Each structure stands twice: as C-alpha cells, then as structure tokens.
Image 1 (tube, rainbow, N blue to C red):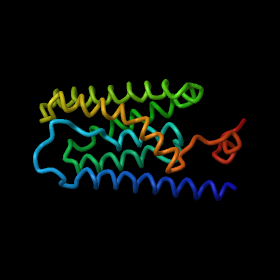
Image 2: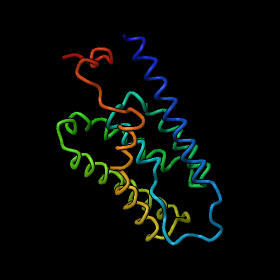
Image 3: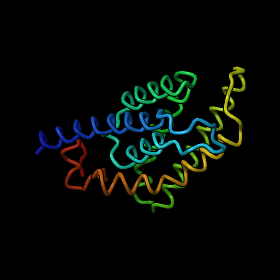
Image 4: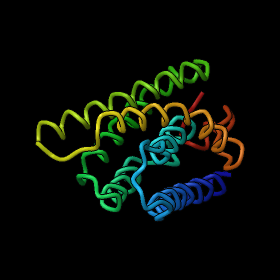
Length: 179
C-alpha cells in the first residue's frame, strides 16, 4: 500500500510539472499580434495553490520554486522574485492547511485570494523600489482579480479531472501521519 501511494505521489508530481509546462506553452503561443487590453488569469499560481491545499505532498517547495523560476525566465519577468513570492505564499497556505481543513470552500477561496493579493502588491512594491519596468497597474489588478475568480474552476478541474483530493483519514498513516 505504501509503495502504491509512493508511486502515486511521484506520478502526480510529474503531472504537476507537465501541467505547468503545458500552461507555459499555451501562454507563449503567439495567438494575437496586438497587445491585449486585459491580462488573463495566472493559472500557474492558481493550480499551484489548489494543489498545495489539496495535497501538499504532490507539490514540494523545490518543485514550486523550479517551475516558477522557469516561468519567470520564459515569460521574461525579473527572475526569482515571483518564484520566491509564490513559494512563500504556498508555504503559508501549507501551514494554514490544518485550520482550512475544517473551513468551507468560501474560507479557502478567501484565504487564497488574500495570498494572491499580497503576492501582487509585494511584487509591484519590490519592482517599484528597484525601478524595474512593470506592467500597468490596471493590467496587474485585472490579472489578480481574474486569478482569484478562476480559482474555483481550477479546484474543480483539479479535483474532478485530475484526481487531486485531500487524503482520507485512512490514507494518513501511509503519508506519515497518525491518528
């Protein structure tokens, strides 16, 4: 049983990496030649937070850091800043996961929304302090709001199609937990 759950963890870790690469691939496709007036949701952050809250063992911090650093490089953002903020946000959510376990989905959504707002604001503040070019404020706010709005759909896809669900109490022993 433990070997089966261990192999499942590694398969899901590889699935997360594949999902992240797929999101980056579609984000880089040149579908439009004219700049948009709106920014799409950051699905990479939404999926990361959804998976962190459902099964933290599927997305270790090193995996999140590597994926977000590659995304920073591929999307031509300042390397490491957003990666650091997402890792810190995901670790915060992992630590809050025990109290969110008893909360409703609305409480989880609110917490994730506040973390996304904090990441957006801190990212803009640091870029402003370092005098780095950044997107217009309106685009950042639209992306932040759309990411928060897309979170329930991301959770639905993660749970329904990808099978990322919180472990049952009977699975806690196999994951190193106890009663």
